[in-house]
Length: 132
Image 1 (cartoon, rainbow, N blue to C red):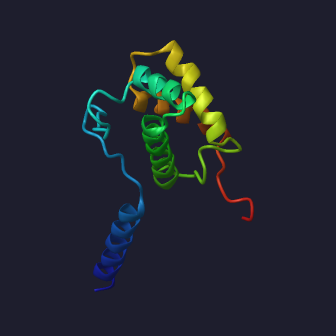
Image 2 (tube, rainbow, N blue to C red):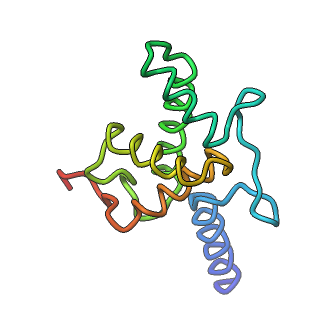
Image 3 (cartoon, helix red, strand yellow):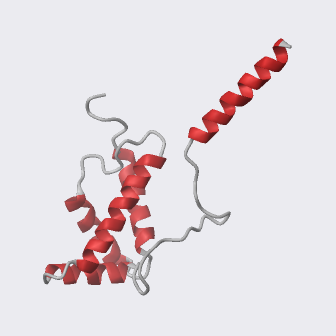
């Protein structure tokens, strides 16, 4: 009877731990869908939106910024040992980095550029709040 109880406790603990752990939401090939309006979502269209923003028309640029901030928030929530992937950077640092990267790689997708950005930021991420 004692052995059965231990197995039930162990199974319950394992179930709880796996439910609390983040999972990767991609298919077997590592592909996942991203939500962008039609004909948007590349580095070239990001650069075009940034240029429009500099001329005072911010609607497309704001869509990319909102997508970026959502990605960063999800990254922070789902990546172990990460409080803030931005570290000591802010949006005014991230956007120029993305522009430089997109100038060099205009044909890649914007999500791929942002993934490269997070990979670059990862070593300097904040692992906890400054009050911890």
